[in-house]
Length: 139
Image (cartoon, rainbow, N blue to C red; front, top):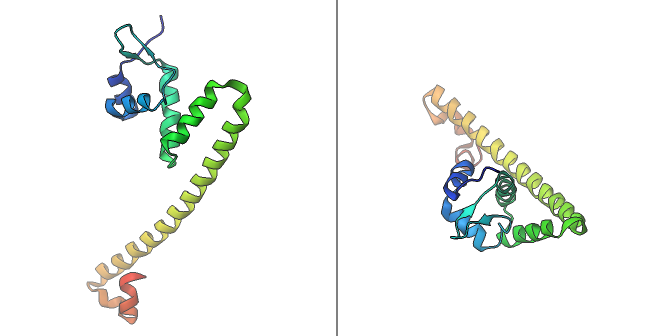
């Protein structure tokens, strides 16, 4: 007998709410999840793995509607391999762009940390006074 998990167990495992999982189901993202005769969802290990992919795609900013396309393609078998590959290549480019933006953000934050550390060590922000107006924004 294959081990199954309740919606609350899966929610806890994935750090989601049962409400979120029900929403995913309603949106057609979980056609693979079986139900008991009374309608209770029974999750298998493979369902949890699929949900991890859904969460990964969601974290890239992919809309639910597009994630649903991916789930539908998975159901379509090998004839949709190209679409799935193309989608992941596009997601990869999106994440690379996000990482570049975050790198720029981190550079600004590191600069401000250095600015304030220096000011703290000097006991005054006046140490940066040569560029007082600009320093409020750029330093």
